[in-house]
Length: 248
Image 1 (cartoon, rainbow, N blue to C red):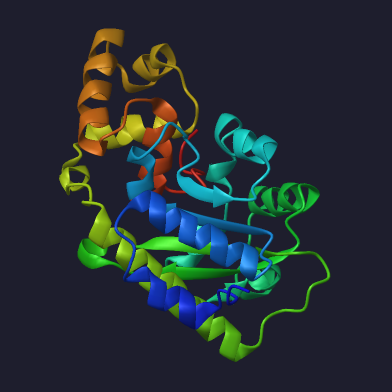
Image 2: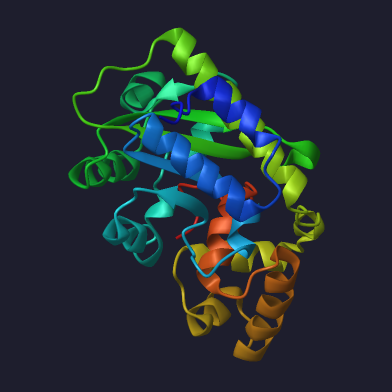
């Protein structure tokens, strides 16, 4: 009978992984062995590895929620990435409202998440070379007891080492995003708001052709091919004020 894949064995097996697909397979096996309901790995790098605009590798996330996250721009109201980026220690989903002040839109996002089966879980910020940081979110089945502090620490270590293994397997994006011009940055923020190119041209006081030109440069610097990925990546890089309340 095969030995259960616990945290220690999972970490040991990471050194044997030689491809991203093998890494995801190992994570999937670990998630099933630990009876996690969901696992998501929100990383800038994963957006260039597939066709999904979700901006994350996801295990157990309902497809309808993934669609809503991108098509309805729920990512603008997701409070976890920004809060996790300011922390070193993991935290539980249900504790977030006691740890920070949430906007009405963020509270609405949490209600929508609960309606789609997200009861409680653990969020770990993980850190990599050249600021290649990411977020690991592990969802628990409703009614399942929370892991102990020792188990939380083991999950944090496993998440961190899995992220470093991913960084070793995948070359990171360049730093061209840091050189966005003021107009490119403004355009990115209006894209995140869902404005059309025609509307953006009117807002910025330029021609539609100029907007198209700026957008091509922006996509090239962010290494994306569509508006949704540009918005999600902009949020991941911290280039967009998540609340966007400063934009009319």
